[in-house]
Length: 335
Image (cartoon, rainbow, N blue to C red; front, side, top):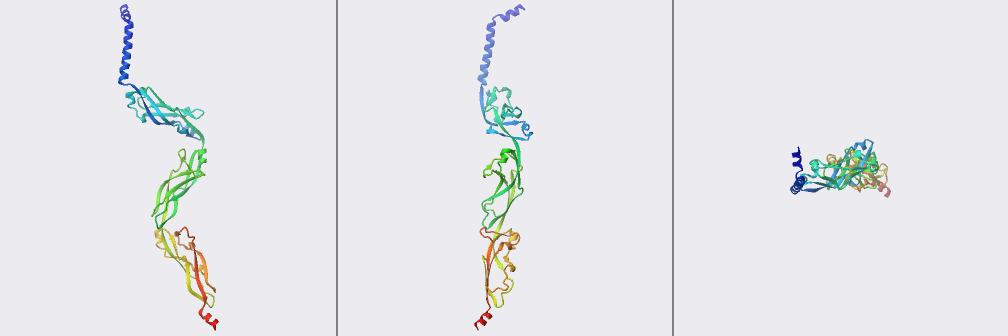
């Protein structure tokens, strides 16, 4: 036992020096072969955990100032580790259970690989900041707009969305700012019916768009059917009822102005339309002793499915029927 003790204590200082030197040498060799270095990962998204702790209270949250995006995450580790870490290996979380009174939640950073070999990992921001509000829901009637003009010889007919009720939910302050929900269909140069899905946009009462990022909607796009109708120029015809007063006759002069109108209808309907006729009941000359001039709204006599195609024309036409004394009556007066 004494010999062992003497062997241990003999040149003890030299032995300690040797051990320390070996350790330093190992560290130097290791640092030379696999030095500690850093890497940076940009714009790391923080995943929120246990958000049901908010929503179960009939409340909603929004992230303030994009604080759920960490601009820079810096990782310190041996080079061999850093070289094998990719941006999608960085995991950032914030647990709502740890939310502070001011709505801030500390961010936890780690990696899904080599986490035990990393010397340090830190972000340029440390907290996610939430705004908590009561939730609200609103239902809006969807409005439809069009842009552009159909091809020459065609006009736009009816435009109908397949669903016209939009329900939005979210923070009360944001929901209350929404005044309208609208879609816009492009009909430029269209020569046939259009059926397409278009995005639903939200607007405030000043006509500015409201971002739907933090809102939940039952529909984000809607199928809209736009009718494109061919146009044709159709003559206006008429007939009269009755006879002028005794001793009077028709002069043979009769006209209608305008004598043709532009109408539009689905092609199958339009092919069957030869004329727009003013019924005789509108032009009753019974007992008249002078010309008949009458304004008639031709729109009242369009066939089913047919509409006026010229937006500048209000549908009114003027009919003239010439009436004069008969030749026999005139001769008797001369005698």
